[in-house]
Structures are given as structure tokens and as C-alpha cells.
Image (cartoon, rainbow over all chains, first blue to last red; front, top):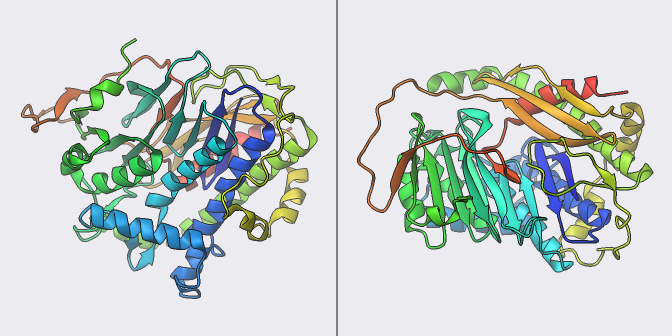
Length: 248
Length: 193
């Protein structure tokens, strides 16, 4: 059973192959993404993050989820040597961490009700669990950043997350905070695989901001592998990446 | 780089307008889905479909509502959804105006989002959106073919190469929401009964 919704201005897709999965489960997951969007959307004037940005609400007065995201963002900022930063032009934009966190939480909702064979997708980032309906690992393609119709890598994944950061997506929507807030250069697409999508997503965002040095940052991080593509179509990948590549 | 900033400033009002238009489309669309859900049983699709192909027909799933409710299984934060959804009532009104979507595949126009073009295709099955595919999005592949043959220690390099599309899901960077919504809007308009 697979369903797609448009939430947070992007497709959110859920597929569950466990027998007997209910429509209510799908509703619960999509409702959760809607809740996250209403709280964290910087495009939505009534969202909690917008109220914080207008200084109508302090962080101390904000919800537990908001405090959690700010704490996680600060942790990621420190762990990335300052390359990950939710402050842009004096305003908070936590979108670089919220998506992975929301997918991870959605996956936990599914685990909690006993489901184990599924994937959750939001705007290009994915958490996969268990096996597909053929009883095999999920086959996950990495999109060609120069041609959306094409896949340039096929991965065989089970119980992990994959996030891709790129320049083409929302314009240069990821900025290097150490370079006058200019768009990061030299890399057009960086995919990161981790034990869960939250880890993969936040470090993909941080490493992408580092430009061509980002893949080395991923190499040094325990449990993360990466595949980086430069403007000439040349890919650079980490030492453990190969084990995820599907050969069949 | 400064060119981008200047244009961002100039296009700010336009962006806001586009956003509200886009938001309306998305809300309308989601409202439609909610409406559809309330009136129809959920449908199920065979599982081994690639994420961006929508060619597999859906079949009714007799098990759709047989599993006990998941209420009470949420993380503690989820119950706040109820108070976070003041738009629920108007959503239903919009839904009744949206009508049903016709089955088929619909392609939106290319939408210029300053740094390139965005175009989407939407596949409707059983009156519901089954898939959204991106036919085009901004890209800028430089023609220079100079390749740095000195790979960094521990890292390996290769030229990217097209692979078989036999996959369950595809990972890629997020599409611009406004361009996406504008192209999707037009695609869904042509799918409206």
C-alpha cells in the first residue's frame, strides 16, 4: 500500500508492505507531517517558527518540539564546526534539520504499531525499513542532478536513511555560513547514507555547505557514507559507500 | 552571487504572491484528498513500483480499516495537532469545489523559477494522486570536462553514469516549492472533472 500527499510544499510518500496495514496508519503519518509543517514552516505566517522570527514568542515560551529542534540544530552546528546553522540573515530557518527529524519520527510511529517493512519519503529524503514486497532490500536510486529522469546509482538499503542535498533544488538553498552566506559551490549533489534519516539529513546539509571538502567530513564520521557529484559530473564517494551499491 | 541577492530582494513581493497562490493550490489539493478519503475506502497499490512511475493500477484493500486504531500510539506531541488545525472547516468547503480528478497522466507547464525551469507530471489513479514526477528542474552542467584524477585519500572517484531505473524509491534534492506548486496546479487543473 502506497500513498502520496503534497505536504510542506513537497511530495510526501509512504509505502508499507506489511500485511494488514490500515488506511488510518497512513492518515496518522500524513497528519504528523501536516503538524510539523504548520509548526515549522517559515512560509506560513501563523507557524510557531514565524512567531519566533517576529519575536512574538521566545524560545522559552515555545513548544517542546520547537525546543527540541533548536537543541538539535545547536548540536549539529557544533558537530559540523559551524557549517550547519539555522540562522540566515538574522532569521531562524530550521528546514535543514526538520525534514529528516520528521521522517525519523514518522518511522518511529510505524515501528511503534508493529510495522517493519516500509519506507517514508519527504522531498527526496528517505528512511527505509525491512524488505520490499519481493523480500529483498529496498532498491533506492540516486537521481542525476543534471537530468531528473535519470538514476546514476542504485543502492540496496535496509534499515537506514538516505538524504540528498543539492544546489538545483530551491535555487542554492543551502548556504555556507562561513563564506558571507554565499551559496556553497563545487558540489551540485551530495547524498549521505546513515543508520537513520535524521543523522543522514543533518550531516548532508552540513557537509554540502562545505563544498568539495564535505565528502571528507562525511568520511570522518562514524556510520555515515556519502556520494558527492561535482559540476562536471565527477563523483567522489567514501570508503564504505560501495557496500550499499546494488550489483544485481 | 550579488546578482542572486538583488533579484531575491526584487522578487520578494512576487515570491510572497506566488507562495500564497501555491499554498492555496496545495491546501485545495490536500482538502480534496481528505474529502476523497472520507467518502471512499482507502486504496492499495502493489508495492514494487518505482517511486516516480505511476503505471501500476490500484486495487481496493479489504484490510484497509481492519487493523485497530493507532490512536494512543503517537508520540506525546501529536495530540497538539487538534489545536494546530484551525483551517479544517474551510478545507472541507474547498474540497467540495475541487471536484474529482480524472484518472490519467497530466503534465504541467514549465515554470520559470529564475534559476531555471520546473515542470511536473502528475498521475491520477482512482481519482487520487498516485505519483508526481519531475520532468525538468533547474540544472547547470558546465561543459568543461577537466577531471581531477587525484582522488583524495580514502575516497574514490568515478564519472557518473546512467543506471537501470528498476528501483523502489529515488533520492534527490528537494524541488522548489513554488515552481513545483505552479506546475502541479496546472497539471491538476487538467485532471479536474
